[in-house]
Amino acid sequence: MFKVTTLVLLLGTVSYLQAAATPFNDLIINTSTGQVRGQEERTSLFGDRYFSWKGIPYAEPPVGNLRFRDPVPHRGWSGVWDARSHGASCAVSGIILTQRGDEDCLFLNIYTQSIIGKRPVMVWIHGGAFILGSGDDAMYGPDYFVTEDVVYVTINYRLGILGFLSTGDRHAPGNYGMKDMVVALRWIKQNIENFGGDPDNITIFGESAGGVSVHLLTLSPMVEYGLFHKAILQSGTGLSSWTLNTDPAKNAYDLANQLGVSYLNNEDLVNKLRELPGRTLMETTPGLWDMDITRGLVSHFSYAPVIDPEDYEGDKFLPRHPREIMESGGSKDIPLIIGYCSEESLFMIREQILDSGVRDVINNNPHLVVPTTLWDIDPHSPNGVSMANDIWSFYLDNQSLRLGNRLEWSRWNTDVHFVYGIDQTVRLTLQHKLSPIYYYRFSFDGSLNFLKRLTLLTTFPGAMHADDLGYLFNLPGLPTLPSNQANVVRRRMSRMWTDFAKYGTPTPFTDTLITTTWPRVGNNLEFMDIGENLVPGTYPYGERMRFMDGLKEKYVN
Image (cartoon, rainbow, N blue to C red; front, side, top):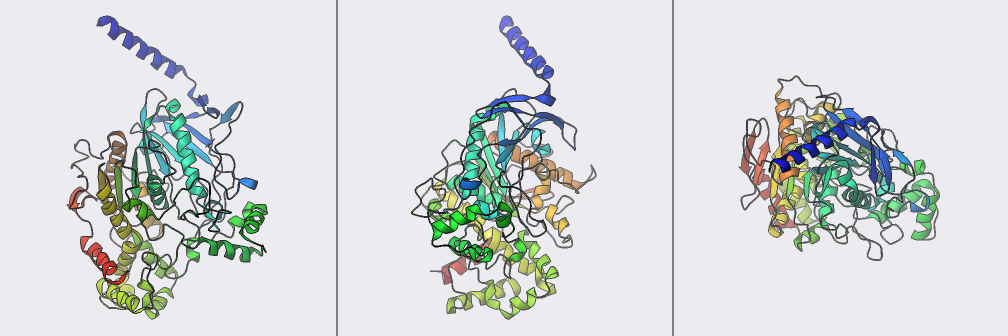
């Protein structure tokens, strides 16, 4: 026994000395596509040491003839790839940002405290309405994850026109950005053990469009079991009203008209679009502010996931509507965390402040409240008119939209855009899964509420869309004093998210920080309210969800 113990200690000492002697500022790792050189870094908040490899290409550059096609896994390189800085972000367009990025953008980034051993892996898929964002650490840094001893990975995927253009047939099937994620996950699965990660314990997580993407990955028949093992869906699922573009060919034709491209057929159109400079295409991607009033309520995103065309003979990412896949039991049976922020659509208040004509447009067109992106209903039909009356009565007490009821108006948008689709996802998934589901509502209103502070809406209660990001990532411009309650909530969030990755439950044990056990979802739709304290409950916003169910039962189909 003494000899065994001595041998273990000696091996451990040798491993430690080897690790200590390794020049981490020039750390080279072997991968299936070639060697990559990383570097040592320090977390900005705690000063803890970690190691990073940035800008690792996982697919061939999707340029030239590969534009508007499925991604091709990277063929590899000779020599050592310098992974000490991020690769280019994918081409983006947005409400504030000018167009930037590049077509050659399919890179991923890896962060870990050690390459020795096997740690749970967490892969972040960024949001941004499928038209903006990246996996770079300026926004989605590793600080709070590497300190919890997980391997943290972020990815880029194609966005906007370049990621989602579809003619509705085999010539441009769409979903290129979604398939990028699959190729990235396959590279991670194959190589993450060399970076100290456990390929048999991978959690994917994302927010907004990233949450939708995570959910669609759990539904896609293109994704093999075992590619990941747990998933966290924040503020978006495959049943969100804005998930799918249901008329993608129209966008392709509108794009051709906008660019002055004449064509004989869809094949000719796509070939001509491949010949244009990427910058030309990128600059035509509409920003969020370019949508019709009310922005997002009656309009689909111009570029978003689609149901795969029937005539496409390649890999199909989404062959049926997400609801059909879920109802047939096609969702992968893995542990899930699913939830949303308590006042997701507070940004609709900022819309009214920035655009003084919004209230008049809505008040003069009461049918605009009918959620045509959620249900197939003609807002001008008798059923549509009656539904609009019920909505105005329930949410706005039959009053015109004015300054005094902007919060109530935002709550209707919160339910349409976010809560109802997420609630439907929880309920449908529960019918077909044995693995646990953990449902949450993030309601904390504090110093790290990211978007609320950016949009100057701090006088309104609750947490708005993307406010949870400040409690998972060390976002710039959000300093807090050590005594601030926001720091406690941040520590709780990072602990629960990483404990879920480690153990399959967000609260495997309780202590002074994690004060309550998070119940898994059952028949009472148990959930956790993440506010100043952790407060378990049943059926969040139950009255509002029952109203939404009643609208569907009464007026749809």
